[in-house]
Length: 395
Image 1: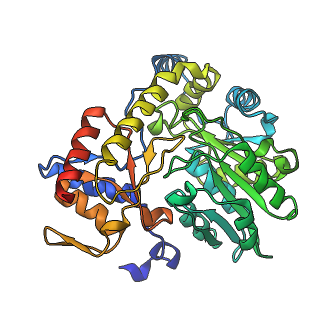
Image 2: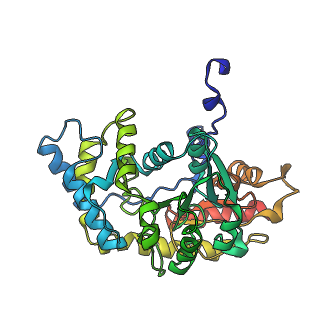
Image 3: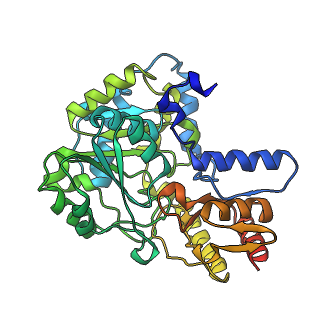
């Protein structure tokens, strides 16, 4: 029945992370013991003080439609958070609250990118960036990097890809899938390049900002000359383990915020009322209240790197943030193991799922076909067992 669907839908790829998670669930439901290391979802419970705020909102009978761009008290709290954590000065008219950071990103791209305009993506990039650009009829322009670059693209290389059609560049630090973080100096160097191109906007996805291990996070919008052309995206899913609560937000020039509000008003309207009230408690809290999660992620990172380093043919860097490792597994391309031919990273991920019963995600979905993404947002027990299985099948 594909002929009845639009070309936009027929040509739209399924999310690789969600597809692998669905495949893993299917095998698990059939009785196979699958260890899921594919989803970017913290395995912690939501902190009690956030739950209490949600319960209080329910008891206060918050149950009506919310303003399209978010409750005024939440937007005020977001402005305070941007000033406190990111040295960014926004007023409430510059804030839009959405149903997750994914909607925030889609709103911005739909509002700004015109058909045929180009959006630069720095590989590795989050799987949905390219699809979101294509839905806006924009053209994703991918700049590659690899493990030898610590999965970061230099400013001088970005300059080589700018054309008269370039409308936007999407930055993501800490990065999903690599965990790499751009330093302040590296981001300022990118800013120095973009200062010469006043018609290029920057979407800075900072959803993992609080999950970092010793490196200071820097917000691109804090570069004075780039403030008026930067849209900062954030949310509470990752740092506060609130993935299912679906709250994301932007800080942006007011005319962009108004455009996103206009679009959102015709698609979803305002985000969930209870989740918004809980988000106020989350972002007003001292970030030290979630340090136990970050400390545990760092401990798991050290563990998984130690275990993976003992497997022949796997190359690793040491990421500074998020909760992923992104090993280069190209050593195995062209090899046949237990009757399974591995030609690329997609084959490798499927091999691990079918033979080791461990779910990962192909790096091809992130613009890096030599890699796979492994999430360590899982218990140490599961991490040990998963890497033990991987090592066994590869041996």
